[in-house]
Image 1: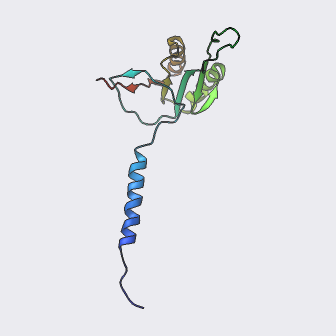
Image 2: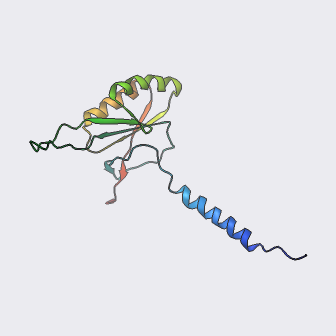
Length: 141
């Protein structure tokens, strides 16, 4: 049996793989919990960080007997792992010693009280870590 090799299936597979990787790479997102970020017309692109801290309020719970909402606690996630504030405070010096001069990205939900964000930022800055507050693009500008 002699004959020629048909290159069409090979080219088709290569093009499909190329399209798969090109389209798949545009959907890479930062790890972390999904939060509704405040909007800002100013934005910069940053490389992926070793530490992403997501801060948001727990879901609202209503007391069925009174109809009032209970106080919502602030939740902290570090790279998709839930930590309470005390655990987070203990983790920061360890992270700073292992990753000096590292940038930390804080993804804070727009409903989180500003005092929590400032306190968290101060903890990182005290360890000489750079802090970036994440926002989402403002579509109006």
